[in-house]
Image (cartoon, rainbow, N blue to C red; front, side):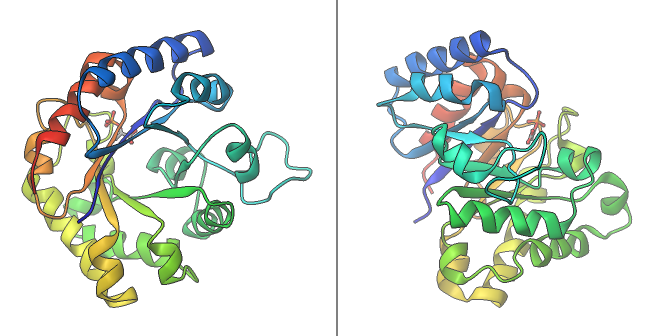
Length: 257
Ligand code: PEP
């Protein structure tokens, strides 16, 4: 049984006060509902991590970051390391988001180093993979996904893989309002799970959670969660409002697999 995981990627939004307000709103709204069947993770900007950690203290909502650097410390101006994220209260970290690959030149090799750093410091990596529109239209979706997965997982043991989460995020569906259909998501999620089976065997393949990300909203979460290999969602835009994110969490918690 894989526990559903819904994560909110707040991207480059929210000042510290706005982040506190959003976290407090979610805490209030989710407290009224029973979401124990779902792992909920909030990923604010670095500057708001400590304050949001304080808001989430003694709740079941977890904190995550949106990126890290693979060195623990040193002369790396502008970077933030895994021990620093732990220090700020994080349990999760998003790695290899398509916006980082696209705008900041992240390669599979860098993604792999970041995953290793996260695991070394007991942070759960949310490893993002996904094809862009051109790649999908050229029928290269599986090839791209396989490249992202193989590249990300170089020298990652089965034991460490069991501690990781994968997010399938088709780039053409991120922030565009275009969602993959349940069938499109399931097709790629199954492909990823089959790939994990080939690399690591059945235990890892059947245990690792694979989230879908790309314009997830309260209106489409039930269809997506209804698919056998979709174990949750990585939510961008809709995670920035109390109503939409709490509704996604509650609806996801009601889908029985
Ligand atoms: C994301 O940021 O990972 C994402 C999926 O964004 P959105 O939900 O806005 O498409």
